[in-house]
Length: 138
Image 1 (tube, rainbow, N blue to C red):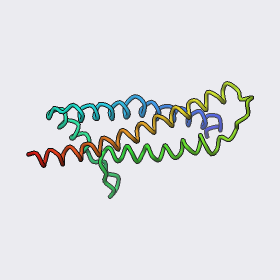
Image 2 (spheres, rainbow, N blue to C red):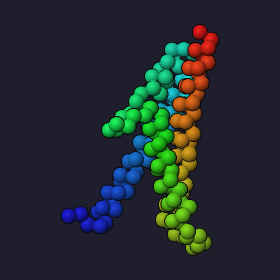
Image 3 (tube, rainbow, N blue to C red):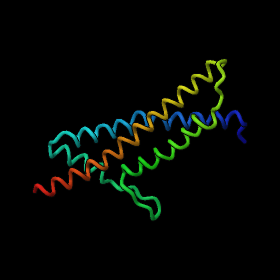
Image 4 (cartoon, rainbow, N blue to C red):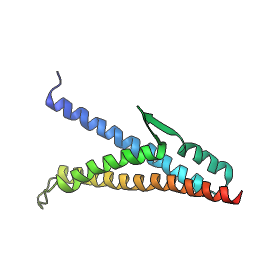
């Protein structure tokens, strides 16, 4: 049976891995998709549309890849916002370096989630608008 300290350490490692995936894979992928969409060149736009049109199915629930990422980011955003603004009411000027580092990480994660939400919603919407516009011009 795991000790409480070991469970906390495992939880921290899991969260660090989650943030690594978001910061170094999900957000850059969203930025690359956005750049491909904005390129104005048909072949690159088709690549981004392929990525955006991917479906993620869990049980009977099916959504597009950008909406899955946006939903996941929104859930994480709620959690991080609660951690940052509700549960962390320690505004003492005598905070330790550890407390300040923890708050800095929480704020960084919160901004990454804001960027991720905006980016993937924008990708989904821009793809729909471009498809509609190209359908009218064809």
